[in-house]
Amino acid sequence: MGKVITIKKGYTIKMDGVAQKTITHLALSDVVALKPHDFPSVVPRLSVEVGQEVVAGQSLFHDKNNPKIRLPSPVSGEVIEVVRGDKRRILEIRVMPDKITKYAYFPEINLPNADRDAVVEYLLESGCWSYIRQRPYSLIANPDDIPKAIFVSCFDTSPLAPDLGFIIEQERANFQTGLEVLDKLANGHLHISLHAEVGERLSESDFRGIANHKFHHFSGPHPAGNVGIQIHHIDPIQKGEVVWYVQPQDVIIIGRLFTENRYRAERIVALAGSCVKQPQYFKVITGQKIKSITGNKLDSTNFRLIQGTILTGKKTSEDDFLSFYENQLTAIPEGDQPEFLGWLLPGFHKLSLSRTFFSWLTPNRSYNLNTNNNGEERAFVMTGQYDKVLPMNIYPVHLLKAILAKDLERMEELGIYEVSEEDFALCEFVCTSKIDVQRIIADGLAYVRQEG
Image (cartoon, rainbow, N blue to C red; front, side, top):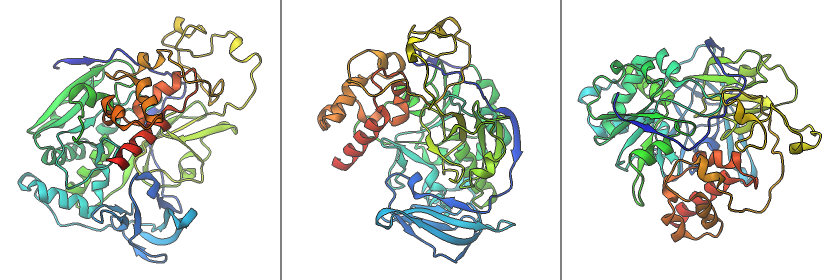
């Protein structure tokens, strides 16, 4: 193992309900849906009509501004409904799946001898290009760009996050093939990040045949597993530069495409949290109805269901559908019960990053956290809290205030191109002022992109 990059700032939130390493295969739900909202900046234009029969891998919609970006159906079946919102905005394309999935097969490609353009075209034709995203802005990558690097983070330090090493072990060969595909696109710079403490789960054989890869070993608390933090410490983004990144499960799906010549949208999802009877992993299809995953597996009636982690995920319901990039469902208690004396009441069961309570005496203890904010929004003041949990060489409060003032030049000077909402999630968690930090960052990135 080479040099270890040690992350000193941050905090790992230990919670009850970690998923046990057992995988259950679930049957398809009666309806599967693809949601354009999962793809920021994509303006959806339908490629199918209600009543039309589709096969897995066939485009359901494409980007109006870049028709080469196609979003594929995860299943075969009949398109039964296009759900629309205000101004006829497309919210969901729903498909009633066949009992036996039929696939669109793509011509076999000789990966070792294929050039970069052929690989790009193959990914676009199949719809798997949508798994490749870019920084800045965290959007689907532009296939016409040449990135300065591609990053794959093989571990996740978020609360209750799935063990990515365990998931990669299930399909080592497809993961290897997916990395070889990215190696073709990386222009000589494919960066693979491993956790220094669990990196042995992935052996050198997983990376055999990749000519230009670079290993990076990270240690330290969350957000050490965030790809944005890794990019900042390995090869920071300057104005005008673009880097791409891909999640390990998406690398596996890309690898399947080149191995099987078809789009197979299976993924392993962790169902975790203190409101889950038996937290574990499930093999499902992208877009599957959440009820088919959580049904009869929750032991509380007053819970909040989240797609993603407690820090960056989105509130959802069992009637919703699994989002395109999602690897985790979290169920925690809804914090809507009044508490006698609130924060004035001392207790050992409360988590605090300051010494307000006694959690600092038991650093390895896990907590049954709920959704209570423990206060309301207050004046946005300098406290130094953000600097303790954001391991980036930027001034977080100054950047946030520049965004609120819409000072474009100042935002650029303070590093807006390097950040994403998830990088500031811990800042929001520790914020005494209860500021919606991630929303401010998202608004800032949207403003910079619009002005740029």
